[in-house]
Length: 415
Image 1 (tube, helix red, strand yellow):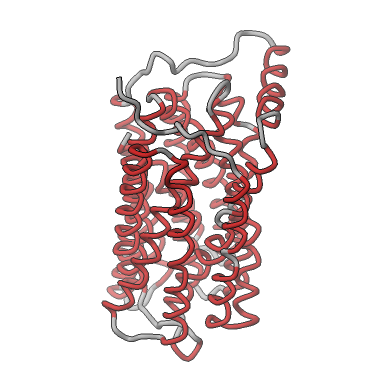
Image 2 (cartoon, rainbow, N blue to C red; image 1 turned 90 degrees about the vertical axis):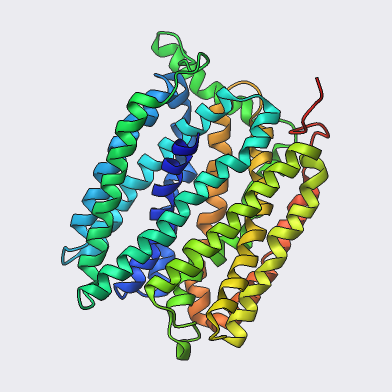
């Protein structure tokens, strides 16, 4: 589980966050960064369209190992493409390939997780799962960014060479993941293709997967929750690193690339990890229904930290770390409710494909607001943008009122 979820998280954070920092350092505008990198969410949005095939053909283990080889190749291609004259176009093309491979890897890895653990252990271990996913984020947003910043400073400001070397290192890491998991990943007895032979069976199974999902009880409330619970966060996450990097006279905090790697990619992710671990623990003790509203409050209220940072523009590095850590802790703790709700909705037949459908709507809820966030920020500036983010938390409270949680779900039962 630890190495699997580290390998799941790293390509996602590379596509969603590291790409933003790289493009910012290479001189791309906030509006273009937010718009085009938000399009990279698309594979996670539409992955339910091919998730039934991951369920139907071969084992989840085989999918995981094969896709890690594909991810290694894609990362190596980005290292090459970043040095091309039309680097923005070509890196976006390769990032798209990386995103499709990563989204498919997510389907297989999440299915592998749900097949191997009973319900209460899924809740208890969601913190462990999240921890190593967060370690991947620390590696991506933190160590890789610090590495790029260090190489940049030691090569006299050669930004292209710095990012090319960083992606070569990441590609090598995925070669090691591929080799390790090929020989060490276990073989659960329940990890079997869900389909027998025959083309008719393929089509029937494919459509039946979606029919069963959309016939679930309260499906409209479910979709609203998946789309709007993180409406504010979807906009915030796209502009955090540009805000930290932009000069103070442009409304930012004027941090260096390496400092951003420390603040947002290391200290912030560590705080998010602690929040995720604590969230998984308390849900496994008292159930999701008991903790839903505390988590709704804790994920949204700390967004005011960025209002403070944008209004005051503090120079104290420790204070900046503290403010970012509070927001990230709240996000880690509150996201547990979202993750466990998706697991609850996916219970039953076709749970791997149904979880992929949930994460597809989750990605859509991140993609659409994120596409517009850069344009909004450039129109109103950072101060008013973060005030808008706080107002954008309101839909998250509304959709939490609509969902129904099984009182016993995820709560550990005594034997």
